Every structure is written in structure tokens, then in C-alpha cells.
Amino acid sequence: MVALPCLKNQGRDVRVVDTPTLGRRLFVVFNYFFMALLAFLCLAPLIHVLAVSFSSSTAVGAGRVTLWPVEFTTQAYDFVMQKRAFLDSFLVSVKRLILGTSINMSLAVLIAFPLAKEASAFRFRTVYVWYFFVTALFGGGLIPTYLTVQKTGLMDTIWALVLPNAVPVFSVILLLNFFRGLPKELEDAAYIDGAGYLRTLWSVYIPLSKPVLATILLFTMVGHWNTWFDGLIYMNDPKNYPLQSYLQTIIIQNDFGALSDAEIEMMRKLSGPTVKAAQIFLAALPIILVYPFLQRFFIKGIVLGSVKG
Image 1 (cartoon, rainbow, N blue to C red):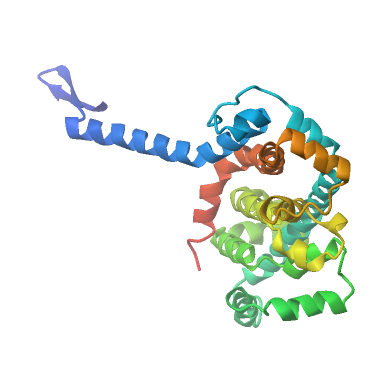
Image 2: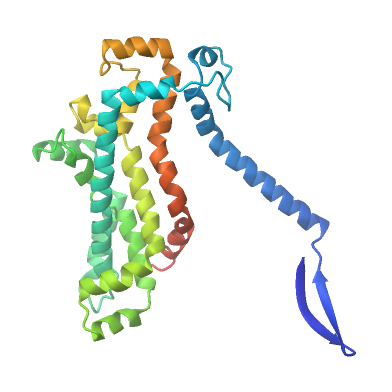
């Protein structure tokens, strides 16, 4: 119900109330039902994987597991946490996440800040903007990129996973547009107070850019954590695989060459699907834990960073 302002009628207050119509109520109920159904469809696969990981091998083999564990057990997680290959690949992904996110965020901010200036303050600004924008439209291709990584001696190192995509052009464009939307008077005031370019960036622009920074931070973290293909082509030794590349070889290709005989025998007792489900859920858990803290900035950051060109 929406209460409208009071009206004076012969010395008495008359409050006009706008009562929602039946059609409006049905529309709201339908929207809530539709969004709840959509949320359930998005969460159902993850819930099923979690239920399989906590179920016994006999229940999973019989197809009795849906959205709730059957014959609850944690043997799959006990096995996974004892696997050296899984823990090594998890640490590689953590190192990649820390290094890659730090480099991507730093370069995106340092590139977007000068490109957000007016052409009168930064000569050839438009040329540099197009230089970066063209790289977002046209890539060098897989073979030239592979040869570049190989000739620079980055194969089988963590830098092969980080440096080829060190400059995230999409993040630069979002930040550039957001910076251009900030009042120029704030920057002028900082210069009058004696602040230089870096001081202005750190003390004025970054504090005001939390929504868009949180958005590109989430994009960057998810990208580094979920990417698996570059680990397969740049790493010759399976010990250097990031987590997603390791899971791809074990789950998709069913390649158990990295497992010892004892681990293969234990997997037979536990059932492959339960162990795979446990590894999939553990791989998704870090992003699941981080996303709620950044979600409130997500939509706002995209909108603010894409309004002004």
C-alpha cells in the first residue's frame, strides 16, 4: 500500500491510499516465484554435487542421491585432503590468484588513470585508448602466444599463467569510464593542496572507485581461478598444473597417470563420482566464500563504469 500526502478537507486530514490491484498482486507473486525458481535451478547442480560428495559409493552407484546425502560419509574429503597432487595444484592456483590479481588490478588502475584525462591534458590520449581497445577485439592467436611464452623461458613457471594476460583491457575500459565520470574539481582541489598524480590517484580516485574496483576484482579472481586451458599448454609437468587443469585431466579426460597405485585402489573403494564431486566442490568453495562480500558492489560497478564513453 502506498500512502499519498494528506489533503485538507473542511479542516480535516484526508489520507488517500493507493491500494494495489489484483493484477499487480499477481504480478508481484509471479515475479517472486519466477526468481525463486531461477535461483533454485542455478543452485541445484552445486547442491547435487555436494550431496554426492557426502554420500556412500553404493548410494551413488545405485542412483539414489539427488539433493540430499544418502548414507552420510566424509571419506571422499578425507581422501582428497590426503592427495599430494590435489594439494599441490591447489597451492599453484592460490599463487596464481594472488600474483595474477595483484598484477591485473595494478596495471588496470595505472593505465586507466592517465587515459581518463582530457585530450588537452594528455596528448595522443585517443591513440593510446584505441591501441588498447584493438587488443580486446583481435588477439595474437594461440600459436604466436605459445611461441612467445616458450621463447621467453616461461614454460613450466607460474609466470606463464600470469604474464600473457597481465593487462585486462575490459577492466581498463570499465575503470577509464568510471574515472571520467568523477568530478574534475576533486582532482583540481588535490593539486591545489600539493598532491601529485600518484597521490591523487591513491587518495581521491581509488576511495571513490570501490564499486567498480570490487567488480573487476571479482571478474579477475574468477578468471584466474577457473581457467584451465593455459595450464595444459604451458605446463609440461603435471606437478605444476593449477587446480582447474588438474581437475580437467582427472574428471574430464579420466587420466589417472598422476595418481599412485594406492590412490587408484582407494578410489575404487570410494567410487570415482564421490571423489570427483568432493574435488569439484572444494575447487568452487573459495569463490563461493568471496562472492557474497563483493556482490553488493557488482551491479553498481558495472553500471557506473559503462555510462560515459
